[in-house]
Image (cartoon, rainbow, N blue to C red):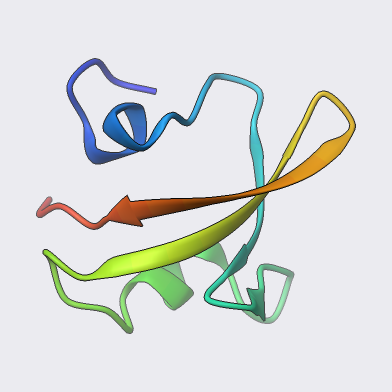
Length: 65
């Protein structure tokens, strides 16, 4: 997680696994990159993450590449 990135600002940490974006499951068919491309920069999305064996939901505002 890069310092001052949208991920860092949202509270994501190294080792977190993103399971869902707005309740859409991240898997082989729906890669994280593919799902994120459906949203525009500045859009707030809900991420379901796995952190240290526990699922959590966090909000993140997408940035530009």
